[in-house]
Length: 255
Image (cartoon, rainbow, N blue to C red; front, side, top):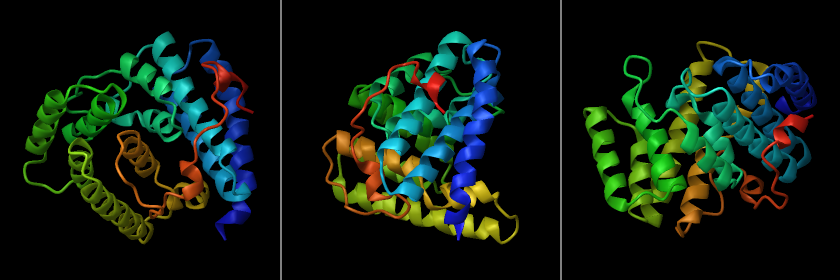
């Protein structure tokens, strides 16, 4: 049923971005502006993936999102952007644009904003940056996971198990942990939907697509782990290589 909304989702997202882009190119955009702009590119990309059954428009939108975010961090700065809100980093990694992801990592606010974000949320993104994007030494990543575990104080965080398997280059452990992470995501969304309806654009796109899951699979593949052919909410089409890399300013033509 959601498929009938996809053309409208794509058009609405790109229409809103035409106005947002005029703000961003003037370097007048806030964190809200750039995150909405990137959210819209992601929605348009997922919508195109589901509507056309082809990967190139999807991967192009994700790469545009990452590059737009990197541009904003360079021109405006990261003072009002908590690291845990840096979903465009996952767009770049999900598109296989590791150069764009590295630009985000170099320009992002890489300190925990205590009182404004959960430490474990910050540390999850920081681990993706250090281990997956910047190829930090193993010892540094081990220290980061120890801090992550302490921050949890015994609470369950399924992302932690995925990160540990990545660091240990444990293919079986990674596939098992990612499967549990994705299954729990599905259950959590269904539980939330019973008490508060999701917007139609979310139901038509990210309800059935895990951006973080795709990025984690990209990291596993980049590090030589044996991944499974199919995962819940990670369409195999989305994992194809991006055949047409874009320039840093390609987001300015994201129509």
